[in-house]
Image 1 (cartoon, one colour):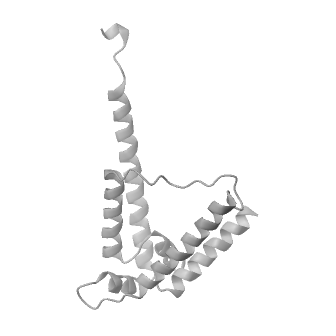
Image 2: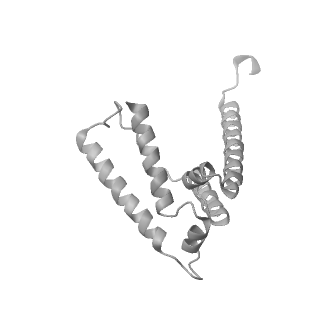
Image 3: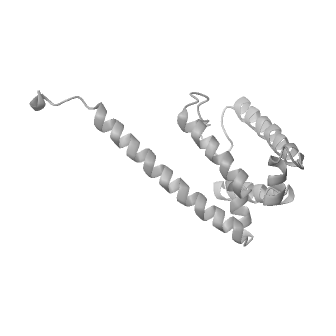
Length: 153
């Protein structure tokens, strides 16, 4: 049942991204071009998505748990830290340069868009590099936070 629900949710999202033209980089760049020929239509799409998501989360919170899972796992609201701000900035720069964000890029790649495939490959590479950097930083933090052993004193 979960696999069917996941498939239907993904299909609905993909169709919605295509219909709203979020998979069209020219449309996205038009939305981001606030000093030129600004196209506000994607703002309406994103605002509508936020309303639907807010209603869905409110329903799940009233219900006490999701329909197909035992627990509702929400991300923490705080802290807003350097990693979050840096990731958001990189996301925005990538969106502005490529005209894609991750979901629409995957949908457009499945639709055999070469530009989307290149963006998706670069995005996956960037995610792998970021993961390595985070793992390295975590290992360094653990190494420096250890107390000296008795033999070192």
